[in-house]
Length: 77
Length: 363
View 1 (cartoon, each protein chain N blue to C red):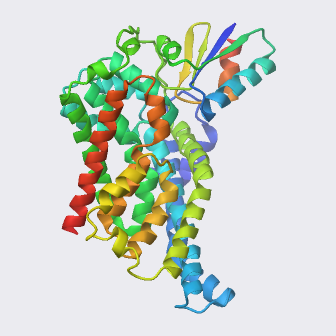
View 2 (tube, chains in turn orange, purple):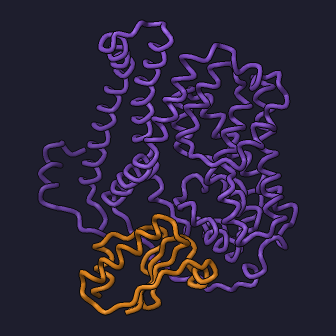
View 3 (cartoon, each protein chain N blue to C red):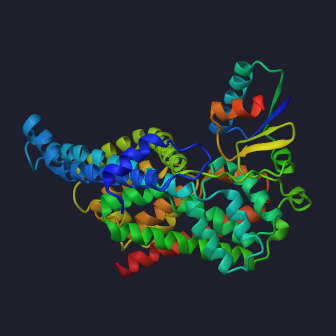
């Protein structure tokens, strides 16, 4: 599983990354987590409100920090 | 209308599933909770002045009318008052914002004519939730989706300029007239400045890589929110925003209290009064690079006004501080060439200055 957290690096983006990491650990699945902070890269994903979470190329949420339960839902599906 | 007892019973049976529309009875429950909350809030709010007097003069034994007594009373009254207003409004705005997303706003603005677009963008700038560090992705998203440059700027100017926290504080400390003036002129500046930038045809001022970008609109899941979710939004907003700004509010009121009690009446009239014509541009030039959140600056504004500073000058200073800042310019430099940033600062700064002069002139 390939998880990308998109965000330029404000407090909320850092929190989103932290939650995704915690969720992956809790679910015990094999996944790579990448933080993307380059504006060009973010825009290429078609996302323009951050933080955003993309899993295996699919946009899961934009413009908010996901809750851990949401994150677990996405990972376990 | 169903009788209230039956609503309660109904609620115990059906807990709303996330994602499913809320049953009408639960909506009624939220309305009732909301009304009760507002009632309690009002009852407490009305007692604040009496409590502050009790605390300052009876408990601490300070003399009414003395410098220290007045400063302490000001602090004890304004701090809980402002914090209570803040909680109420931030909660309300949090719920309001759950109806808007940047994606929806972009859809509304894409392909809109200028003028109409500028007005809409300025209004949507108030209610669309986005974190300040999203300004650049948002700019790219808007421009590549065909939102005209001037309309995009109207949005980007109004979003920080018309700030719910500043609005609350101005209302609480200076009354509804000043709050309305701030809201009206803030919107006007966003509309006119955005329109002007559009007229100047500055599209070449956008960095080339942004203009050459072709983005396929991503299929972003449109969230279905229940009223429970929206209440959660309100609560999160209160936790996030009030939790972050309360310290600035208290510090700002403490400074304000000091000015209130100890600086002589009319002291600011010389430097920031109506007759000092140069004070408006100086206030704007000092305010532009400064960055402070609205919460900290409004109590100081109130205190300055109380000592004879002119409303226009003080309002211009406040707008310059919250609408334009050095950190924001550094971020925007990634997508805008220097000449467009200069035009942006120039047009918005000029608008703020005009507002300053206007109010010094008419009030």
